[in-house]
Image 1 (cartoon, protein in one colour):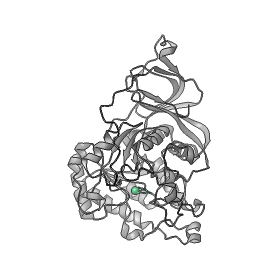
Image 2 (cartoon, helix red, strand yellow; image 1 turned 45 degrees about the vertical axis):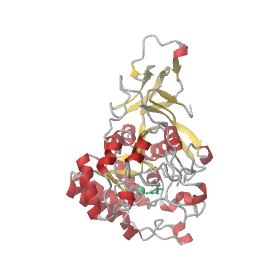
Image 3 (cartoon, protein in one colour; image 1 turned 135 degrees about the horizontal axis):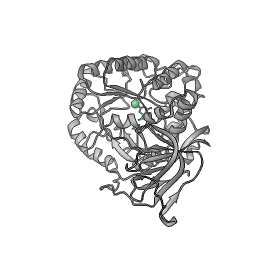
Length: 441
Ligand code: DOR
Ligand code: ZN
C-alpha cells in the first residue's frame, strides 16, 4: 500500500484579501431568517461588515455587481467520500474539496470507508488538518476496520477531531455491537450515522424493481432491507438515548418510521440525497453503472414520500453521499459497477429545482437543510451573513442553466446520472477563510 500523500498542516491563517462588495443580491440566511434583497460587504479582514459610507479605493476592493445572484451561508455536506487514502485515482482530499467548493460548500464531513479505514487518530488528524478549499470534518469508523465486530476507539478518535461515527458503506448490523457504539458515542455527545441497510435482507440486490431491472435481469433490492434496518436503529436510539443520524433514506416506510420516532421525541435525524429526491428507479435509462448506488433509487411513491418528509421536517437535511468511482469501474455496467454517484457539483441545482421550484419548499427551509441542520448535527455553529461574522458563504445563480459535462467537473470522477443533462441553478463562487473563489463568476 502506498504511503498516503500528506497535505500541508498548520493553523489556518485567514488570507487577508481585498474587501468585497455586492451592491445588490438576494440574501438568504437561515440563522437570521433573512430572505431579502440587499447589499453585502466583506472587509479586508474577511468579516461581514456594514457597507462603509466611503468605499475603499478600487485597488483595495472587488465589486461584484451581477444581477440575479443569491448569497447563502456556506453549505455543509455531512456525507462525502474522498477516497483518501486508498483510491486517490477516484478522488483525494484536494480534488474532493475543489468539487465541494465549486458546488457552494465550505464544510464537509468525510466518510471513513477509506483504505485503510479511518479508525485511527492519525488518519482522522490527517483529514482534519488538510489545507484544502473547504474545511474537512472527518467522521471515524464506528467499529474497528469497519468490520462491524468491535467498537472502535471512539474516545481517541473524537479527541483527534472526529465529529461523528459511521461504518458507512455498511451498516453496523449486530445490535449488540451497535448498542456499545451508541452508548460510547452518547457519552462523547457525538452522533452515530448509520448506513441503514440490513445485509441479511438485501440479498445482494442492486436495484429496486423496475423495467431496467427486469430487462437486465438485475438482483432486486427489497425495501425491507432498509426499513427493518431503520426500525432496528430507532429501537437502539430509544434504548441508549444516543443521537442517531440515518443516512441516505430511500423508502416511504423509512420516512414514516423517522416521523414517528421524532414525534416520540427521540434524537433521530435523517438525510435525503439529491438523487433520491429527484430520480426514481423507473428513470434508469439502461445498463449504465452511473445510476447504481446504495441504497438504490426508489419508486415514484418513495420519491414523493421523501419530498414530503423534507417539506415537513422529518428528513432534517440534505447530504450528497458524493461517492466517486473511476470511469473504468463504472463502465462495467449496472451488474458489476461499484455503488455510488458523485453529487457535490450538482447538489444546488438539483435540490433547488426539485424542492423549491417543483415542491414549493420555502427558500429559507431549503437553506436550513444545507446549512443549519448539518452544522447542528456535528456540533458546529453554522456560518451566517450577520454583521461581524467571519465571511463564509456561497454565491448562487439559481436561474443559470448549464449542461453537466463530467469532464469539466472538479471531481476526478464522472459517475453522475446528470451527465449531459441541463440543470437550472448552480453555485458560482464561495468565500471562506479570507479567500474568494470564483469558478463560475
Ligand atoms: O452508493 C454508495 N456509495 N453508498 C454507500 O453507502 C457507500 C458509497 C461509496 O462509498 O461508494
Ligand atoms: Zn451509505
